[in-house]
Image 1 (cartoon, protein in one colour):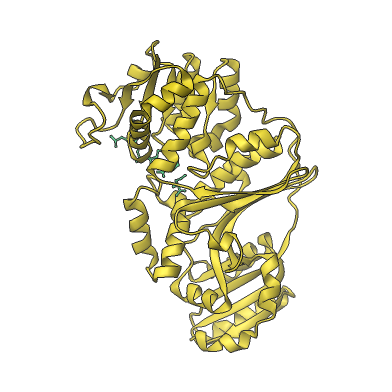
Image 2 (image 1 turned 180 degrees about the vertical axis):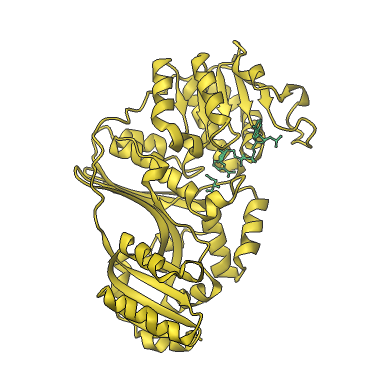
Length: 427
Ligand code: NDP
Ligand code: HSE
């Protein structure tokens, strides 16, 4: 018999309970053990719960799980940094294995938690923490055995992808789409984490630490979300034959490291542009294997519960080899990567348009221009992320502008278009 202590019984926690119950015999066959949830920690003991859970196992005292010598595996599904970090630490110190879906706590102290598990000869598995139902951590651990990973990129947040899909396909406004994403359980407890790109930044930091072999934290990722994208921008992109996605990317060689999360414009024919709703995609470039793409549901009760239960089975079967995330020295150089950017500004006055163009000319930036009375759209050429961030800051247009990188492969496509013909879109 393997006893599990569950911390949290929300979207993912109830998914895990259902899978463990519905797939009981298949799991017993795989593990040759009976798996039992012996205690579940929640905040509110009085709340209405999924009927599958026996209320007798609920507790609001973490010690009932963390200090119970009979519990073998602690499954942390409460989210956030604290008290999750304290609970995971105590579980490992008390000789328990840990499974978690919590990218916030992992990207905060990946090295500390994985080293603590190693020191105590226990497993910490976290397949559900990145890209929900997509198996990505396990394949990545396999890949790094002899592949050198140069680049990882992808759509890593289900909530923002769901919101953008609803805005583009159904014409919903941002707030309506966010309400829907929260209702179905995709969003974080604080959805700012999703819409400002923090959740995707945490996920790219976890993937980077494993792939590149040095500790990458949330603070290492230059991150922007989707809150500035308006119906005006979406209309404009559609007319250009482009779509917008929130993309996380990380790149490393022996000298350089760069990681970002930002809105990116993609040709509607590209693979990534067709990843919709709460689906995610992760693309990895290995020097031997070449490019691999992993696609599937990135959030939700069943896909995420599936990843958690898979980790539980691996722990029971003794498949929890530690990851060495300090295999290499972290490069100190951030490369200056030049791209092209869409920049839209809602003007406060007509005069402002001249001022903005004068400033841009002062920086000797190359651009193509679409001009209206109330808005200005520029396609800035060969500009780095750092430069455009500074430009927005200096022009003091943060609250009324939107900028998005144009994927390099898709820029040639834009170049062929006559931007002036889009003038009627800009009022
Ligand atoms: P929910 O907000 O739905 O559930 C959180 C659960 O944790 C609730 O049962 C809550 O209790 C309990 N809880 C929260 N804080 C405490 C505390 N301090 N002490 C005791 N219990 C507490 O979260 P999700 O299930 O959506 O997410 C769980 C984790 O999984 C997070 O780390 C999230 O990032 C991650 N994740 C979520 C995905 C998703 O699609 N939702 C996908 C992939 C990962 P109560 O019920 O009493 O309020
Ligand atoms: N809030 C997260 C998302 C959950 O929308 O992707 C899955 O990690």
